[in-house]
Length: 347
Ligand code: SAH
Image: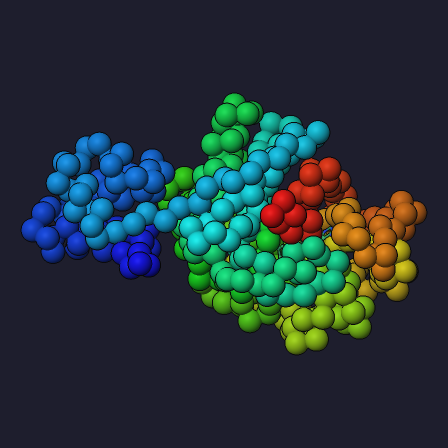
């Protein structure tokens, strides 16, 4: 028979307190359970040792604790670790630990598969199966935090929502997970250390601005020419550059937060001077920086990383207009853990 008990991790602290009051116990009991669930990362009622045996049994009869399990872990030559994470219903997502000098960054997934269809990204070849729940996103972060302590002897320092999925197509749950990550009764991390990366969903960028979020925003731009962008990111036909730009202006007006544009340069696709000129023009809309990322091949001959001459032209073009630009090398390529390579290959 299918388990119809409710997942206690979908309840707020107040709801757990109300449950205890409802069964004639003290509301305070809810605080204890909440701490076990979120601060201590406990996955079994029987391990909640400061509760009586009766209370633990009571919880057991009413609730389950759904949680993720790291099913498979791969380590790259460069120290990057990729986790294949099994969800309670058997579906799998991937998350990545990226060690950089004295920092550790977690790259987490927000959906099983992806709602969008970027033709250069391996995740887009998977069907979007479902959105992740807040606790499933939170658990990925906790798992990487623990791995960072274990293997690198330091806590997790940064989080990027650049794993599988489009975070803004699962906005509510992403936001709820960030609330837990930043909450003192969670991981207590600063939102300044969190970056949400989107392919560019204008309506949702505006919504985030209205919600007054404190984390950073990255936009996967890849081309500032509408026709070119549509050819590699087909959803951009509906989410046009004009609307994107307008949404980003709104974002900056409301949050005063600079935007990062992620950008891959491909041979024959966006490696011409007109591509650079269009990007420079786009960058003038709001304070920003450009992060040129290395292309990680996914087996489509249409896409080939442009040569260093083309990259130098981009850097020169942007710097001439005082637009900050960095070039980021891929990490974890040998284990398919780099940007756009997450595709549950081990399954
Ligand atoms: N959907 C979100 C987050 C996931 S993708 C977004 O689009 O931003 C994370 C980053 O990896 C994005 O900038 C994306 O454009 C980039 N990416 C996707 N496939 C890639 C590939 N094969 N090589 C390099 N970067 C890639």
